[in-house]
Each structure stands twice: as C-alpha cells, then as structure tokens.
Amino acid sequence: MAAPDSSSAPLARTGATVADDVVRHVERLIVTGALASGDRLPAERTLAQDLGVSRAALREALGRLEASGLVVRRHGSGSRVSREVPLSATLAARLAHAEDDLDHSAEFREAIEPQIARLAAARITGEECARLRELLSPPADEDDDPDQSIRRDVAFHVAVARASGNPLLSALGELTASWTVEGRVYSHLEDEGRRISHDGHTRVLDALEAGDGDAAAAAMATHLAEIRAIIYASRHTPPVQS
Image 1 (cartoon, one colour):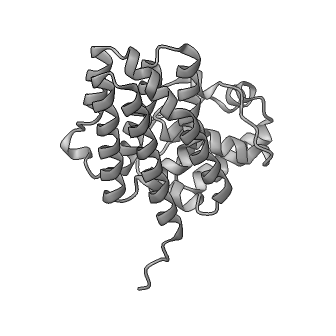
Image 2 (cartoon, one colour):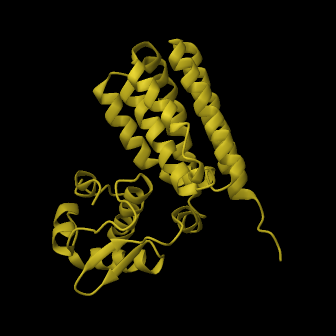
C-alpha cells in the first residue's frame, strides 16, 4: 500500500450509512494516489479495526467497490486496487447526483485556497517552485490521462498549501484534497477541462514565483471559479443521443 497512514485514519462520517462512508473513503485514497493501481488493501480485520467499523459494513463496502470495478477481491489473496478500470469515469458515473456535495466543495475551496496562495507567495522556496513546475510538465504519455491529471491537480494544491509555511494550513490543504475529490473528477474528464486547469495552475505559480501575494490570491480565485464553471457544465450537459 502506498500510504498506510492515510488508510488507517479515522473514518469521516457523513450521516450516510457506514458502508457508504467506507466506499467514499477508499475512493478518495485511490484518487489522491494514496492507494495506487495494484496496491493490496489491509486484511479485512485490520482495516475494519483501523476505520472503526464492523467487518459486515466493511465487506458490504468492498463488495460495492468490487462491483464498480475499483477493487479486485480474490479468495486467499485479499483485496487489491484494480489495475484496469479508468478511475475517473467510474467515479464520475457514481457521483452524478452529488449536487450538494459538489456545491459545498466549491464554496469551501473558494473561501480557503486564495488565502493559502497569498501566504505561500511570501514564503515559497525555490525548491518548492521547481517541484510545482515539474507537476505542470507531465510526461507525454500522461497528457490525455484523466486519472494522472487528477492526481497532479491534487499534488499541486497540496504543495501550495505546504509552501504557506503554516503546518495547520498545510494539514488543511491535505484534508481539502480529500474532501473535494468529487469535483476534481468532473473537471478532468475532458481535454478542455484539463487544459483550463493547467492554465490556471500556471498563473498561480507565476504569481508565487514573483512573490506577489495579491496576484497569487487573485489567480487562485480565478482558477477555482473556472473549475466550478467546468463542473457545472459537466453536470448539466445532456447526454449525447446515439
């Protein structure tokens, strides 16, 4: 497993069923890269104990993850993250009715992330800027890969939060990445969405490298507004009739 500490974190409860919350928890670990394709999940007894849930609820969740193609379960060898199913398409289909969650996610990001970018502009190091530039220059074979694009997006925003130099904001940035996975899926499904996201990140980084806090906050606010518009359009575009 890529990030055991993430998988053993206490389960965030949302008011849904326990199985619903476990499914969402594992989905988020996969999207953020904490669980990579082919990674083995902990044994059921261990995972249930770490998450503070019953084994019955965990098994229900794993069964649903298997049915969606995100997890492969084999008797005697446990459960693994699938190597084959496109993650973004799978999650986008599941999240088609998450209207309130997506709106809340957008509002949360718009309230928090511009101010994080403002602080980061005053404190970011050359090494951190270089890392962000690397995230904006993916390998050629990842240019049209929604899954990799989502993970680079998460990594970019988490890195900006860390560059703020405030450990509390850094931790909040990582939590934000987990809480806002659903919206990110929608914004990276199409080439145009990925291009707009990349251009927004570029403007943010330009301001960070210039040490201009006002420009960094404004660039982040504009970027998030553009992403919100993409998500809205994706959710309200009628399906193509064959």
